Image (cartoon, rainbow over all chains, first blue to last red; front, side):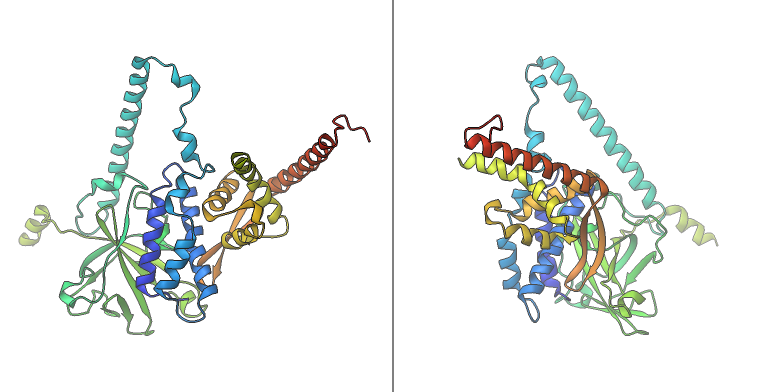
Length: 272
Length: 113
């Protein structure tokens, strides 16, 4: 079932709201729960809609599901447990508690520094200099906000520009900006979208939110989502499995390049 | 009364899921729908999906991802050997408990027949 981008965006929005209430779960559990919710919605849509699903059907399904806050307050998950103060801490002196608080803050700062270092190392491999984003140090407090990628004049489209591939995922909700899913080398390193509908790859052109392949005539969906104020581009990967075996496409994830003038490179180029 | 019922339902959820999966693998939405057939359990998505994830993490369930025609790949849950052992033990305990409670209700706590 191929959903219109509007419905996909609404599903992503709901999933991001649920994600806000999963902080007490481990990252793998969060991912599993979110995957279950996403497939739940698709399965329910498939059962209810003989033809193309409508926005109204989707809203009914979401309304029938538990509200996002239920995932943190149903008494089954660890979130409620973590709110309980263990008896051993209830009688602690203020000084001891202050000492523990300081230790926790110190560990949190160290963790943030480590995440920032890993992030900077990954960024340095890109062929353009990308601005680091401090906001990405906060996992699972992110917000997935689908952005509009069509109904805009071509020169206003948010797709225009150069994007660097950072991950490959089976669904949008699987993406976590602080932990890449794909462990190997990504086949596609980057892609650049020009105003005239061309890309830096001669076989691909783009229009609205679609990427068109001139050889196999396939169309891939392009979806921009905002995660904690950083834009990510999700591009359906139309492989042979998709075209021949009719499997569901997976997604390349790109991060927008923000250009900085690298003085060393510029000088070197001038002298060559 | 309502608090007691709520607590009892919570305690039974894991037991019900493991028993359901004794009959073969199933995916989240299907498991939810099957459990919702038992009205007394009052099962919703926010109770079932976290438990499925925890049971998988605890080693009682394993997951196989399979393509779905309706959307993203589905995660099919099935019992591991540990899960089969767990549900076996739970069922033995449940039967013993049920039997003991029946005797209590009849005023025969020592098993007099």
